[in-house]
Image 1 (spheres, rainbow, N blue to C red):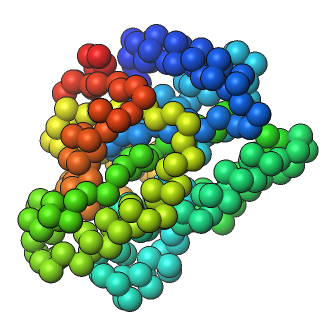
Image 2: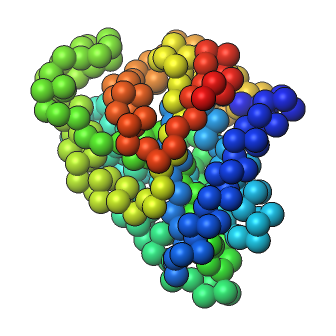
Length: 276
């Protein structure tokens, strides 16, 4: 979301000591430090990642920002999942709809890169709901990999926690629980192994699901404004609410689970202000 000058300054005040700590930690390593940044939609992951990258640059460390969103499976790959496993897997977002093997390969290439190595970074275009044809390029080896995403660091739930649906989407379209079981098994398998690569985990804690819906709606409005005249279809309010229902179970779980496990937590109030 667009930031006021005051809010940017407040975030920067919190990010600066974080960057200084990462500089000290990276000095002890002989490889890139992997910093995980996790939080629900609209909590400001992209903004904080950018501020952190700029601060690290000021400390003389090159960094690269990667988003788990850019690892989404293509529309065609999700269509096959929807046909073979469960129709809800057509919708991007939940664990099981990312190319985790691609993410691991990216981490390895960046870790082993020579000064002139060019690494292709995938880009997912949410406006067309598919991977962009033109990747970004990163040259050399970064000192820090900033890996941000809504479910970064998420653990699987206990099987008993999957039984009761948390919203209408689960009760109406996943009554037998096959979709949420598939998602949970993905978390317990390839995602757990991938998240083990994180050296540090920062969690951005939203106060409630209502706030997540409001903040995600603001994001969609801003994206629509940037895409005006492009012909790209954007979601209306009802579509956004249904879309976020795909994320609701794990968002609630992470709000409960991650504050005790993350290395650091930024807490926001309903006005999107940092309160601790």
